[in-house]
Image 1: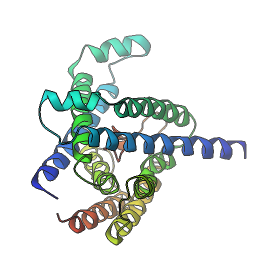
Image 2: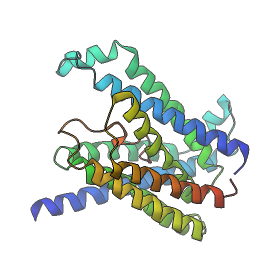
Image 3: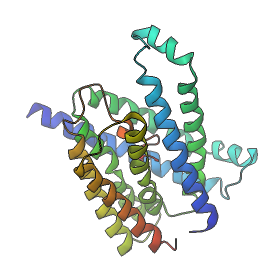
Image 4: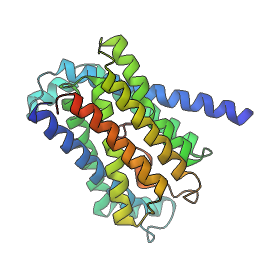
Length: 121
Length: 145
């Protein structure tokens, strides 16, 4: 992997994490209410917009990333997003981290490492 | 039995949409090659039909996902949406002649094992309508995607 590929990969996981956590923050706000009022409430606050901007940027970064690596390698390396978002979610929203989750996180990370190192990382 | 068929068809459609989206992203990126941090590159990306196929696939993916989630438990749903790594690998080997190297096959196997663990961890861990943050990736990848 060239330095540019690594930068795009890191940028992708960062944007994905920021985007997903922002949407979670917007959707999980207990004061948002229901129906149309909920949407008005969410659109008037920054989190949903932070999420949208992150996703648009991620979309472009991901296309750039995929044009530099094999697609099969790209999607495997992209699996790290699951792990990072999960850990960030657990920290920020105090979601539980059970032994089974830790095992899953370690396995996905190990799989990504195998692909990344073999790819010349 | 009726539900089993509903899920089987629904999840198959979901994986196919996910796969189509990733293949389209790859085609779009290849057409716009080389990637540059400027407007010209963005114009090249949107100047080919593939990016629009990706968007259509993404919309289809979204509605399939929302329909399934109405009934399907979050754990298996989470797992299936990330199993596209396998289907994308197979299609990449076929369409782009990408080699199915041992590290890729081994890496994919370990990742899928991890996803299955996470799926079991999600099952029953969340009340309805309280999907975990990472339940659905942005671009149908791992999210990332």
